[in-house]
Length: 568
Ligand code: ATP
Ligand code: MG
Ligand code: MG
Ligand code: MG
Image 1: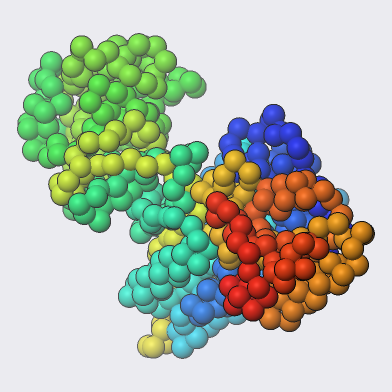
Image 2: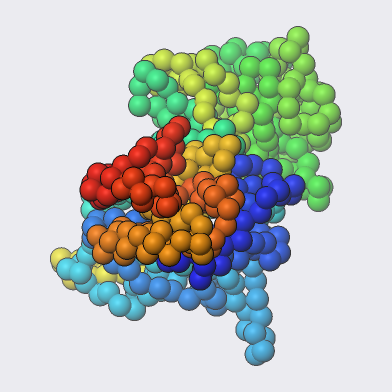
């Protein structure tokens, strides 16, 4: 590419609207332009980087045996009704209507579409396992789109979906995808960490997230340096529960006299309390006046979040607490989220609605009692995503093998073992070896392709601009001509070098714009080209080129052979 024929539009000033460095640099380098909230145009420069990321993702997915396909962006309501997600997905789902008054959504993910495809295409276990993937535009009507393409509304995602005859095959593919993700992020030159994650709105059993480590990350990761424990803090508590009661175990009432501490009530109920975060269940009144079950998550003196759950079935007469009572009960200042009064111990007051520590005990429908033997899923809906942002460094690791460290991360990938949730809901079956129709087990695996571009900049920049990892750079090498108009010999030499590099398969850009050296170098540094070669009259006379790596502190003078070896 010749820059004189390209559209490069860098800015001198740092854009005021951007809060984090990647957003600033993407605007300053002219990689993206905002069209509307959460909607960005990828400029020719930005698109080159996006395509490089896509290429690595595609290559590694293909290597892993996944098969590329493409599904529509607009999907009919009926399909999403089959899984209940037309409603359950919530306001992130953008809904549309066509001229015939048919309803559609813009795909935020494609479990429904791929399961529909699969049930029409695949009939026998002999065709399994299969892993289909696509790299396409997704839309989520994020409540707070921000940080440019990092949390956009329209973004590029690689999403893959695997189908299996049994759980062992799913487990093998889950591992295969986990390893593939590690390879992708390593090839892209990112510093990342895989952590255990919640299964959220997608549902399912096992789940890991891949995070690029960066202080600007929206997620807190808790990990233990002396063991394998690593979790999204969203989940640090929820993934370390004790054993669940057997599904057959009935709910039972246990007397828990008033004014007991968490520890004392736990002892009465016979449940372990070796948890970083304690959860306290409270039944209160919802805004509609209906009873509402709330799980308050408490760490030390902090109530870190509350999760609204549904009405507890079969317990019509429980005593209701309103929000003020819950606050009083937890000893908190108004504001609900945030620090509690540190001088006041958190007390479980069992005559005040309910209280519990483990996930498997909940409150009472009368003073001085708890209900034990609760099975999430059977007796109550599974809790929604917990958000425990106040877990702190030095807390004991839930596996008991050390202390927790906290790092911030940007979620760039997510693998889920879904099980049969979608195949069952959508009546998707294949014939097994005995000719019996069975629901295939599924996995799904996402990568935020466009988010990776921003995440990489968070990790790779300096005062002059972006320092791309080799695999993502818009070009590997920039050949810069000093005074191209004045000196035809210099231009000819630069052109020759440019052709030679291209012929050697090195993605090269020729800066033939005729800018002053200072302005030219500033652009090349800002847009983050890993290698810069300057061709000048003085250098040519001496038979050398001035070479500088983007991250090096000084230039080197190299003859052509050495230069080509260096770049090759
Ligand atoms: P987040 O927690 O950041 O909202 P998510 O868990 O909702 O992400 P997934 O459903 O796991 O996202 O989707 C797979 C991947 O898509 C994510 O790991 C992330 O990299 C990317 N992604 C999700 N939402 C966005 C967004 N609004 N903008 C850019 N990338 C996104
Ligand atoms: Mg999300
Ligand atoms: Mg997430
Ligand atoms: Mg996720």
